[in-house]
Length: 637
Image (cartoon, rainbow, N blue to C red):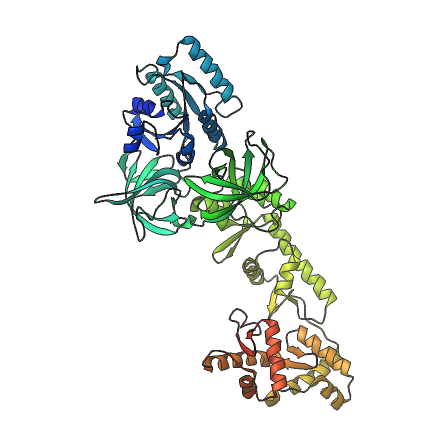
């Protein structure tokens, strides 16, 4: 169990930790000289239950609330300290608000310096504490009078903490590993050591980990868990990790970094979240409201964009957080927002989506997806997200952003339809998958009925015509499976149903059979124009043009200019010729003259061909020069 202190400056937090553990958590010379806590302090003790409890002692001064926040994440039980002689003070209230926003709802109130108060004063302060805690997650916290000077109540407080430890549920040790770094230092003969609370999963000596957001790779050389040497550290423990790796130095690792399993490294600078604004905030939270974001042990500048109306003091709602720098986070992580001058706490909440869109972020569909993502159980959240648009979820990102282990991911995948698209796995509900198959077959059937002469429908046109609209790579992978199953047939650039064949009238087929030889052979790079063939054969020019356009839709020819058609094989050959000319050119660029000389046609026709490739994206143009676009080089293959 991890216990975190909270409370106003000089209310005896450090003295109380020393009385409970025998350890002085103030380790800096300045702290001892001034008699106040400036940095996070740590102590450990067996409270009588046979296990080691960790204590995080935080500063109480308002100037060091950011340090308090770095230590407040990951605690199991709050030890709220209120001095009997002072009572509830400003930082008592702010620390309590922060604990409530962070979701810390288990705690004990220590009424310190009890030796300085008589029974009436103790009762008065106890009533004040009860009124302050009302309406928060700590409303039912017991109040125990204690004195670090006389020892009064220390045994009772230790017993209460031991009971809380016995009731503390284990954290998600079966999830993927994450540790929030709150301190890094170098030990002579040991190297770089980082400390923090293990948020999820487990880590063992010899494991390879990543320090995010920088992306440094490190190896775990040794572990101290709860201040004891250990072979592994697990969720809920405070751990010190001795790390080795390039760039892994005291100055290369910072408070706010997260040590995590390599598969989880995916920093973000745009987060959709649910924010609760404190009632004490003086004005509404509007668009691009500036703030300081505290998440884990990290602190970064942020702009707040409400996803509905401006959030009034005391209200809660969805927002987008646009960060000044990327952070390592997970869905469900709690955060705190403070004002840019670090004088007050604005509110806090939880992360819902780490891959938030910059556009269309306020649509009803997007808000419904965020409501679904807010469900705490991953299986329920995934099912809810698959029931609302866009009806498809990147399962790889879903598992990574929730720090799920491979076993947990596999369990989720077993309940949905999964499309493997290389590095990405897409999830659809079984009902949506059946609907997609039906939609594709129905769309193709309608297209064939309206365009009997065409070979089939283009892949991209079909993708955009059906719901859900899968990403290109995902649609290609799904379509490949449908082709393997015999439900769809691929012919060149077109897709068709198995029973469909493109149909021209016998007269049109006869005319096309007369045309195609004219477009091939030695004159394939300078074929006759439509008007020339029509005039020479005494055939209406409109019929020749119509048949050629039908053949173009079937992928047999390409219309370079309104009056100029080339065989598809010739088009592909000309792409290869441009690539060869480019490879031979000293500067890697192709001129129209060089291309003209290879295909031996006129400059005007050569330029028309090059313009056609420009329009198709096959070539990239710079003035009068071209080069092959490697992403579209196989368009006519």
